[in-house]
Length: 556
Ligand SMILES: [Zn+2]
Image (cartoon, protein in one colour):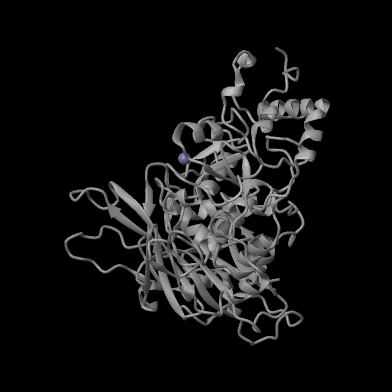
């Protein structure tokens, strides 16, 4: 039988129910009046409604169409089956049975961090979570996956992952109960302006369902397979206050999934009412894998800086940022700065002791925008003997930053270059300590430790004076807020250095309310003393401009 010509058999089932009907005896997922837990209909209304055959027909058609749209399996021969044998559909619970089934909800199995795909159809449209077993199913109309699950497993309570409305199936009525608020909050935690303003000011402690104590914002992140490189970057970004606040407060519902899912994950990281003391980045990383053509995914490690670069650029575009105009998204407002590059073509090599003579040759000056600054390490000593426990080389951060002092020249290919940052510096600086280099044959790692204070880094020596934007000779102070470190862990005891190594990524996060540091490696979260932050191979650092020292550069 062709679509839309089915007899309106199903809605008539409502007749058998001794409960009030709403205006439309609709059973599908379309708009309908919210059924309060108190009954309020009259039989007269019900009869009048059912006499209106046209209306009922429309309902059946709509229902069929919507099910089709949602991808549910509808067999063409279904009309031959006696549908009357199906369970009774209701628009409201029987009187006195409002909270029936609510005690079958099992909060401990609920995990809304995974991508919302129906476990049967794999569709992401119109997905419900079964609150009894935690699985996702599509639709809630008759013959939908959730409906069948309710019949087969005797699991009756479902939440729509979009609307957060809770329904009892197979009966099909909505349940409104204050006792469901905690679940709705975990699906998609919301924050008020006031709450966000307190995040970095008031010390907070929470307990999860298992009674584990945790500090919102400093929670473990599930390394599902090999996505630790991803986790550390997301954690670092979720602690950049203006970016975090933007994604907690702005409505990004009309933006692409990348922005939406980052927003959700950021709010989950800071959720003070979480069911468990960690989060899974599954939803976001699945979107990243899709958008990046699997350049970044959860099954294979990648470089955190490469991922950061990709992510910031794509987040910028997802927020409607311009490809050419600077400062057109929160991403650029927070991280983007400009630097001056002077280049001189090397025509004839001078002798070894010769300094650069820019006055003699054509010097080309370019202004370039950056989202992060690359810091080069001095070459590490070669041929270190493993048994001698050789000393790992160290270099102060100020030394590697001198790349940007406008005096030191670097040679690259046929050019000598000098770099200098320009005012105004961005509110947040990202430093990439370049440890890995690839040549034709191998990928090499420089294990040099960069030493740095976690507070009061003065950036003014690396910025071209510009009295109009920043008073000359006044410091420009930054404090560290996040630090991503690398550790090479041998996968075999007998392997030589560089062979069979696994990269382990960790992130250190400053807890501003306690003036303490947290170290997060996947699910492991621990408080660390400031000094231990130095002792590892720092790879990516996030520095925050101290209030009142930034001249005119201010984050929103
Ligand atoms: Zn279930």
